[in-house]
Length: 116
Length: 115
Image (tube, rainbow over all chains, first blue to last red; front, side, top):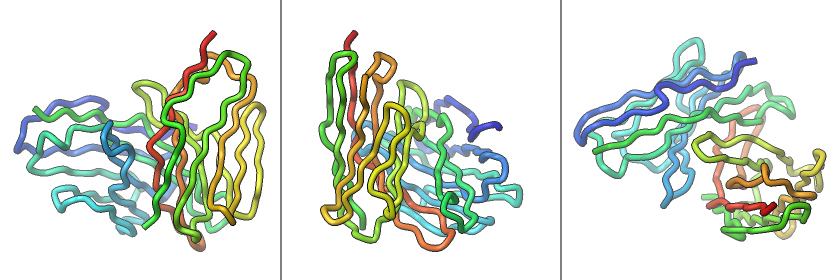
């Protein structure tokens, strides 16, 4: 069974540009969440989608947005990039069935974004 | 919101020794506590998790304990091996019904196992 797949793995952008990151969850998983990881702030929750609806959102500015498609694949977008947006962006998926094992969360390898 | 404290930030042990990493959380409504291992250049890998209706869970050399009254949980690794060297993160989340959970992470522990 394939894991969570993120593309691209590495990218370099210039300040002011925008970027779109893609995530394919584990087959059958309907929930996708995004996290930002930096040395200073650690792992921070960005937002979570289930059935194409954003259910939770972290404390990030409106420049950070996301969406989920009907096949559960998700994208996140960062507009007007700043140097401080340089980070590892991680996608995670889970299968929410309502059962006791429905909330195990699995992460992808991440997308390394460098803003110059 | 939830706050998770993790200690120690670095831990160095000799191969074969045990390692213990401790976390405390602030929100008594948290009911799911996973542990992740992250190797350099990779995403976090789930190694074990525990839910609030269980006090202890083991998986081979790894065990996690949970004390809901004190709001702390710990990761225990026995017979450590060099390949256990990595950064370990604890997390806590609140969930209801079948909803997915927002994970709040600790700052991580860099574990080094010396041969």
